[in-house]
Amino acid sequence: MDASAFFKIGYGLYLVTTRDGAGRDNGMICNTVVQATATPARITVIINKQNYTHETVKETGLMNVCVLSRSAPFSLFKRFGFQSGRDADKFEGMEKIRAANSLAIVGADVANAVFALKVASYVDLGTHGLFVCDVLEAQTMSDEPTMTYDYYHENVKPKPEAQKPASAGEPKKWVCVICGYIYDPAENGGVAFEDLPADWTCPWCKHPKTDFKPL
Image (cartoon, rainbow, N blue to C red; front, side, top):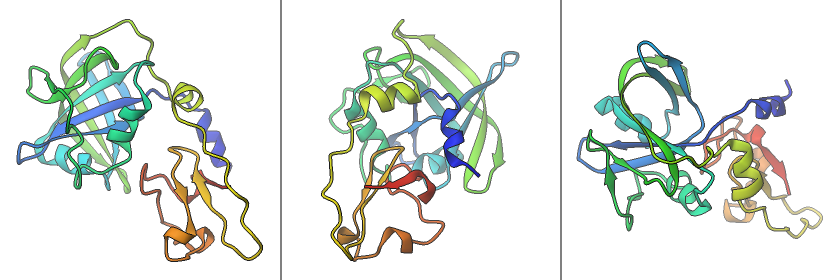
């Protein structure tokens, strides 16, 4: 199977925000948000089960989806996509804006629309969960074009820095083509990338080994 074929499918980029049972705000970057039906108004959101957001949505049944615009900076993707809400307060230092359902959202400077969602049903996809959600509220925030997966990679995400080629016998470094995470054997107990388990995933974006290439 040619895994690169999947990269030809068009995606938008979204910020999914939640609040856990303890009242702590959380959020994650997501590229699997799709309108399912117009009547009733429903949206599907697919989330990796390893993400804390999956846990909080299963617990509360609520989430908001902010449609990110091209003005969203790389720092926002780092904040919400490169760390776990289990370990970090992703909204720390940010001015919080809240939708009518009290969940946090981001402003019109980085998003062009927001949807307040309530989970109607759930489909277990193995590694991921698919949430079918009723749209409780929808609001246009700006006319800025939507951030697409391609636009993010071409114009927002920094290009990987040139790496010194591995010397003879030295394990190679590998880079995730999705988020830019670099796997360095020297920082991981000397374990070569090729020796990682088949089900190993990127620590940042949770994509599989097949989405890495050697540096």
